Amino acid sequence: MLDLIKYIVEQFAEDKDKIEYNVEESEDAITVTVLLAESDMGKVIGKQGKIAKALRTLVRSATPRGSKKYNVEIREREAE
Image (cartoon, rainbow, N blue to C red; front, side):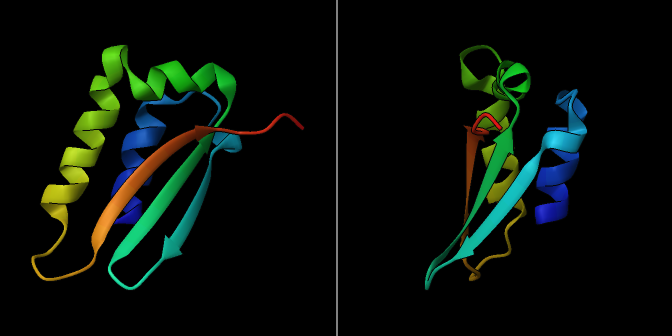
């Protein structure tokens, strides 16, 4: 599932080197946090959040029935 998220995010982001993916697993869910450069935030989220919503919909529909639920969070990286 992480490969699907990476593929979709990298299609829209320009600074592919600065993308980080953090995966946290709990009892009932897996949370994938995508950390992006400030310049890529708008491109990956899209107008009115349409791309982010579509990404979450694809991940939800690709998750096998009976497995853990995936949550996708998109955040800006902290300045270095």
